[in-house]
Image (cartoon, rainbow, N blue to C red):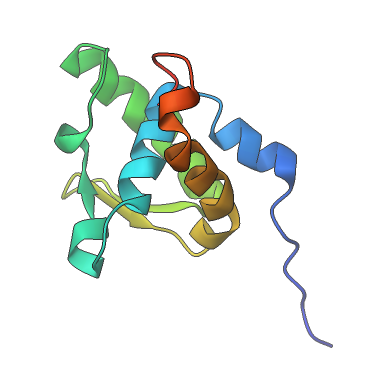
Length: 109
């Protein structure tokens, strides 16, 4: 008997995009053009939060949530993330956000 993997729900994608820091991280992964460019270190991200606050929230909230959904693979020892096995399932929504940045309110991306 084959084991089917359920597709990520729209609600799960919206939950992943529900915080600006997660959106910025996912958009950074989207915009990489090669495998090396797709590895994003956390200090590369633009943020409105202070460094210590961002690091704490990334490591304890945002990275686990995105990793659990399969959208990212996090290497906490080396402090970088790459696209996860399910990144392609959220990619259309990321492209929609990225292509419409100029029409979105400030602070959304």
